[in-house]
Image (cartoon, rainbow, N blue to C red; front, side, top):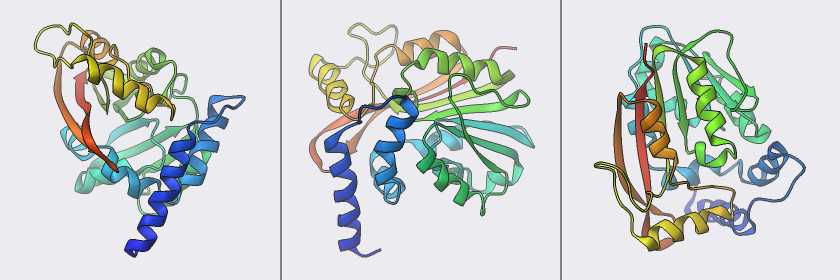
Length: 244
C-alpha cells in the first residue's frame, strides 16, 4: 500500500470516528453501521491505536490442544499474534456481533483453519465445551453490559483456565493497593474522548477483574493515539486464572 493510499484509508476511518457511533435499533446494528465502512482499513489503523495486544497474547499460558475463545474478537487479527503457538491450539472461536468485521475473520480462517467466526453476543454465547482460555482485546469497553460479559467468560472457562484482558481504562479516584492513580484530567478527558465512538472507559473494570480473579498479573501503561500529538491514553493488560 502506498503512503497516499494509507492516508486515504486513515481519512476514511477518522471520518467515521468523527461522526461517532450511530443510533440504531440494536447494538449489533449500531456496530455494523459504524465499523462496516471502516472494515477495509480497520486492522491497519488499529495497529497504531491498540497497544499491548501482542504482549497479552504471548503472556497467555495454554495447555496442548487448547480451546480458546476471543469475545468481541472482530476481524480475528489477534489470533495471528499467537504465531508459532497456533500449532498447539485446537480451536479459536472469534465471537462478535459485528457482521462486517466477522467477514474479515472468516477470510483469516483460510490461513488459520482452527479459527471459527461466531456472530453472537459476548454476554450470552457459550461454546460447546468448557475452554482453556478466554480473552478480550479492546472489547470490554465496547460491551454495554460488561459485567455480564466477564461473568459469561468465567462461566465458559475450565477451572484453572486463563482470562486475559487488554483495554483502555482510567483509574478510580482512590485506587486500592499498588494500582496506578490517574489525575483528574486523565480520569475525565479520556472517557469523554472515546464515548463519542461507543467506547466506554470505566474505572471499575480493573478493580472488578482483580476481585474476581485474585491470582493475576497486571501491567498498567500508556500509549500514543494516532493523529493526537498530545497526551497518551492509559491501558492495561490483565491475565488471571480461574480458581479450581
